[in-house]
Structures are given as structure tokens and as C-alpha cells.
Image (cartoon, rainbow, N blue to C red; front, side, top):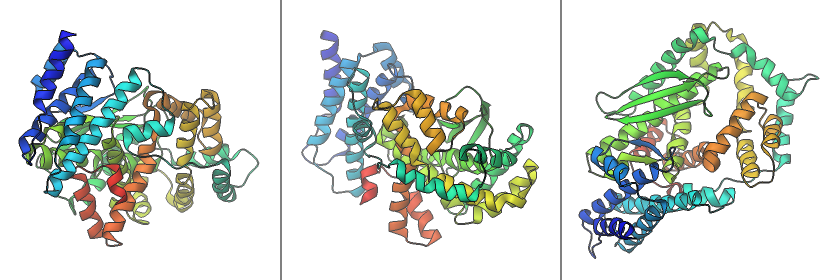
Length: 428
């Protein structure tokens, strides 16, 4: 018990509060939060997605290796100290306090899950990501499938017909890197027309296999990222822009770079030097990365740009591109089928094999993609809501504050990326 008391005393001292606003207590609380997140990373290998703060903080947590019980006690004490703080008058500082409090609550929830607490899918997503995805019935998805059935007539299953149609749009493996580089250049040039990025920012791309995800951004600090692309399954031509925007510009790479520049370096807010994956921050990160695709390529600009720039590089015939994008738009509406499969599977209502069948039927996944998706459910659980619900919430927020003006949308989008917003803030 002596070790637990020593650890808690250090945390309580670090987050001592003040009756009037003073940045020092918040900064001490931020240090405690970062160390707790790093300590959690010693128990949960997926938890710390990025860290570029003081290396001695991570070394300290690796040496002490506080137990889950110690982390839970420390995080609970930190949450109570933050809750007792008087809300600052400054708007950004007030957002900071709300953000740090809610992130700490999510840390507590994650500890409890690792300790064995059982939560239903919606309870878990609310506790970790500050949001709950809508429920959709089979009838909802069947209506969307009927629309697709009219676009792809035939006697085989709709999933088989879709897979056969899409085979003409697979990027050849020997063209993959060249196509991605062109997509990255296009996304970056459009982003730089509207946003000022930190000098020296850049990322590298690696091609990997045997992963449960299709792409991943590993932010490394100093405005640098490593982006990995999973080549286990065929990559279609539209995924080049998806991944280039989502993982790069104006997605994860830009989001993390702006947080580092505006909040960590300019303001000294060390809590943003660590990114806990299972937290409300992920809904903002994934939602903004997905909506960033529409920001960079609004309306039919994306299809026209891809036909002009990517199809020729990939050696693909663009004559059927119009139908391809029309079908993809319908397929994208099935996105919430993945959430529903994950919800039912993780709630114990269906088995893994039944989840695969659900995805094949209602998300029109191939068997291989459906099995990869269920592996993702196993590893990341309710995290799946962050992609589609996150995009919907970010889109709602940006367009409600900016209207139809592309320039204003870029401005509001950029302000969102550089501020400590929570998912619940996006509804305001």
C-alpha cells in the first residue's frame, strides 16, 4: 500500500487547485494526466497512439509501472480536482478544462474495462468517446440495398455483383506507390490553399500487411508522421484519395501538427503531447479526417480530379467512372451497417461468423473484408463509431457555423483542428 499512497500523493500534489483561475494548477493537472496516460500504455499496447512530450515522463512511468488500481485511484483524484476548479473566463482555457476533465473520465472508464467491467456497446462508446451512434434496423439497410440492386442488375448475389464490378477499379500493385504519391500531392496542394501548416511538416509512407486496419497514421512529433497502408486486400482507385486525405492532408497529419503547433508549443498545454486512442479525442480525429476528404474535394470535384490524375497513372479505364462513383455513393450510405454489426457482436447477440455474414449482406463486404472488419471489432471494439458518426458530427458542426461558403468551411474546419473540442461540443 505504501507504493500506492506515494503515487497518489504525487498526483494530488501535481493537480492542486486554486479558487481563482491560474494556469499553473491546470498545467500541473495536465502533467498528471499525461503521466497517467503513459502509465496506462504500459498495460494496454493500443492505448498511447502518439507521444512527443518530455521523454523522462515516459521513462518514469516505465520504471514505476503503476498498477491498474493505482492508475484508477490517480485518475479519479485528478478528475475530482479538475471538477472542483473554477471555470476560467477565457474561452479557450474553459474548453481546455472541459476537455481535460472528459479525457480523464474516459481514462477511468478504460481502466475499469481492463479490470473486467462489462459495458454494452453504447455504454462503452459514451464512456470512451462521448457519443452514441444511431441504431438502424435491417429494413433501413434493405432499402439502400434495393437502390444498389437497380444499379447492378443480375442473378448473382448483390455483394458478388458489386465485387465483380469493382474489379476493374483495383490499383495494380506495381502502380500503388505512384498513385498514392499523386493523391498525396493533390490533397496537400488543396490543403495549403486554405491552411497554414507548420514549417518542415512531412510524412513518409510504408506498405504493410497482416493488419486489422487499411491505413494508419503514427504521429511522431516535430510535425512528422509515419503513414502505413495495408496491402492485404485489393485497393480500389477511390481509396487513394481516401487514405491520402484521411491519414495526411487535411486529416490526421494536419490535425496532430496543428495541435502540436498551436496548443503544445505556443500555449504549453502538455496534455496534447499524448494521444490516448480510446478517448473522445479520437472521435474528433477520425471525424475530421473523414470530413476532410469532402472539404478538400467538394461535390463532383473529386471524381473529376481522380479521372484526370489517378486513373491514367493506374492504367485504369475511366469510361465507367461515372457509374463507379454513383455506386460508391450508395455503398457509403451503408456505412452504419458496420456499427450495427459491431454493436450486436460485442453485445453478445451474434457470433463472429454471424457478424461476418451481416457485413456480407448489409455492408456488401467480401468475406475477406468482413473477416478483417471483425478482427478490427475484436481489437478496437466500439471505436468503429468514430469514423461515420464522427464525420457526421464534424460535418454538422462545420456546416452549421460556416454555411455553404467553401472558404468559411475551411476556416471553421481549421479552427476545430487547432482547438480542444469534445464530441458533445459539436452539437452546440
